Length: 153
Figure (tube, helix red, strand yellow):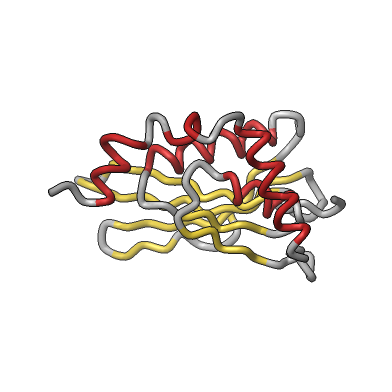
């Protein structure tokens, strides 16, 4: 018997986004639906958690509506796809600087680092968390969870 996780990791993840059609069209549909439902960030620091984010249709739509988004999925391939798409959104923003948003937290073989990116002397445009699994003193797995701050949409 195959578990849900095994099904996503071994069978579905390479095809997941293509099954739904054009990615930007799907993000636009999700954004329109969320707007119709009255979903919006009331405060500049509003956070939305997208559990089971897949490749990020809702994550990016929520970010465009002004939320800082924490996108979580157990399928690392789909999270990597979301991270690539989120980084593509930043390509047009040269001059960004990286800054740690606190200390590195370590517990056993797990390390966490929160970070901000943005223009110097401006509020962060992007925040995120790097999560590292350390084995034998080296980073064995690194995941970056990116949250986008969209201030003026």
